[in-house]
Length: 97
Image 1 (cartoon, rainbow, N blue to C red):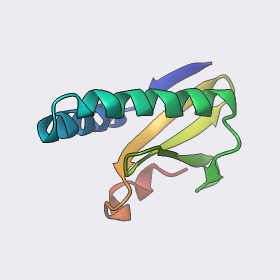
Image 2 (image 1 turned 30 degrees about the horizontal axis):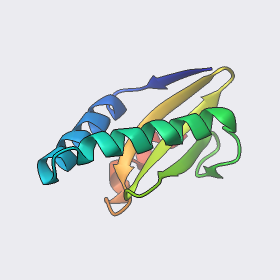
Image 3 (image 1 turned 90 degrees about the horizontal axis):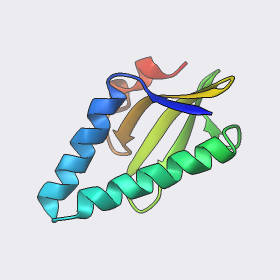
Image 4 (image 1 turned 90 degrees about the vertical axis):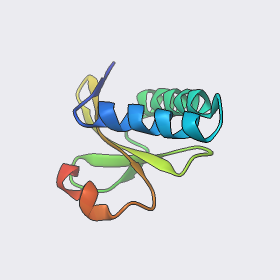
């Protein structure tokens, strides 16, 4: 199963890593590790996460206040958004399908 970060989720991931590395050396790398673990959980069982649209699902990243919005499209996981949980929902609602 392929995992594809659709723009701008690729930029959102890098921005979060950079933000946490600015807060404390190595914290961004920890965030990235937790992100990868969450993606592995999604790949293992893509249909168990909370549904937030007709096709979109949401998985929280453990230890960090971020979540991943994604679509399970046959053999692919399409990540549409990586957002802070306290961000204004208007930021990402147009990416929920």
